Length: 231
Image (cartoon, rainbow, N blue to C red; front, side, top):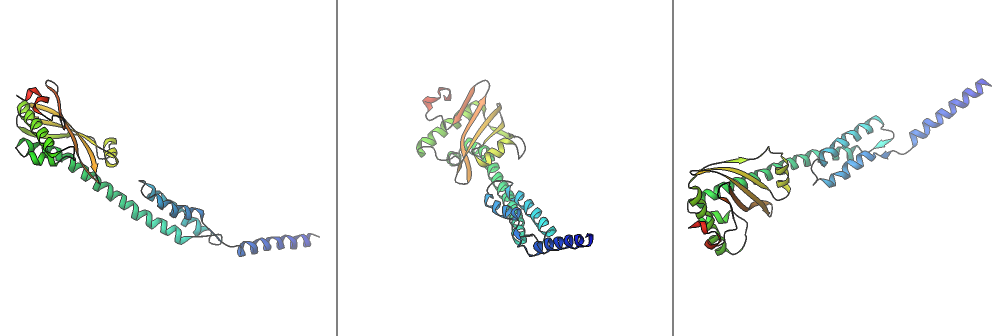
């Protein structure tokens, strides 16, 4: 009786092994998810995460080759993840450099304007109104700036690191930046607002703040009458 039971158990085990060997392999769900997730490549960090999932899926397939398949899908997710992550890093770096150039452009534009280059000052800003009105506003703003503070000696940005919340926001939306300006007649805080014209950030407004004489901005002073202190 025990011998018959032994043969029966052997038969059942052999049958399970045979069924497992003949069952069709299924695609790794993790590999499919990793590859499909690369469609969200516009979201920062997603390609890298999908690449990690692809590596994990490849490990699962290697450990269970008789049950899982999809090595090509897993490796494709890994390769795409590496390429897209590198692309995101490069795009972020380029965007930050553009943002940095636009911010520095505010100081350069102000310096040019104070040196008499009205057109160079106006051209640094995104279009806001008619050209003649913008030039008149620029002349009043620059004239008042020179009258109040004299010659611009140096400028120093007031900002946190590259990955500060303000900079991350500026890479995606409109940005802001502050500078400490050292004029011949004293120090002034300059607040710069940026907006995007296409993919490139441009100057939107510039505001100079002096604790004694108050604040003034461009665009803002459209005529001499708007600011009697100009005389």
